[in-house]
Amino acid sequence: MLLPFDLSMGQGLYLAAALFAAAVIRGFSGFGFSAIFIILAALTTNPLPLIPVVFSCEIAMTAFQARDIRPHIDWRRAIALLAGAAVATVPAIAIMARLGEQEARLAISSLILVLSLVLLSGWQLTRPVGRNGNVGVGAIAGIANSAGVGGLPVAAFLTAQPVPPAVFRATMIVFLTGIDVMALPVMAANGLVGPETLTGILLAFPILGLGIWAGSHSFKAVSQTLFRRAVVLMLTALSLINIARLAF
Image (tube, rainbow, N blue to C red):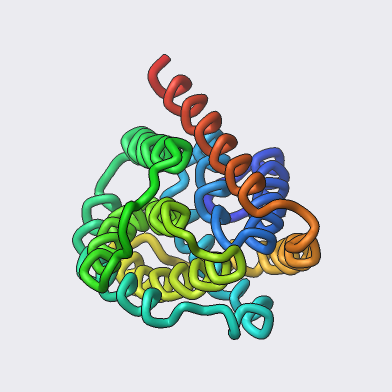
């Protein structure tokens, strides 16, 4: 069987396992899908062509979760975040699309490392954040989304505030879907979307459905705080491993 993006069978099986793990995490916590999959992919191949596949998957996953999350969405916050992301999406993707494979893997791993360390720092906001603050964080997320990890800045931002777990999860899902919808046409315009993208999406969908189902059914069984911290620790370790491999 010929796999897209010149992947070997071994790489394909590895990425399928990574996709399932990332989908379970998304189903459970509402964030981390793109970052986990992209950093795992970066250990074995150029992750840039895979980002549009990931974004398409993220959009599709929202359909699995829409009924469950609808009552908990903070629409005012989500819209402000998306407004900021809209400003940064086009220039950030245009720059990322012009990087070579090694540069892209290093840039993505470094960005994930920095954002993961912010999440691990325990940073907390001392006062409520208004619309302008949400727009600013959205712009940072739009830049990060050129590397497929636009959810991490927003996860750090929401974690620093007293946001209930169900609201955190629902608002993250809506925001991630929105920035991915924005990013896909820009990626297509920069040559990152092609026939192989569709093949990758079709291969990914069955794995996604199973992973989302497993993660969503575990939502109430484990502490959200502890789970998110475990995800961030994993991202930190994987990004350090990838940076070390590229450096040596």
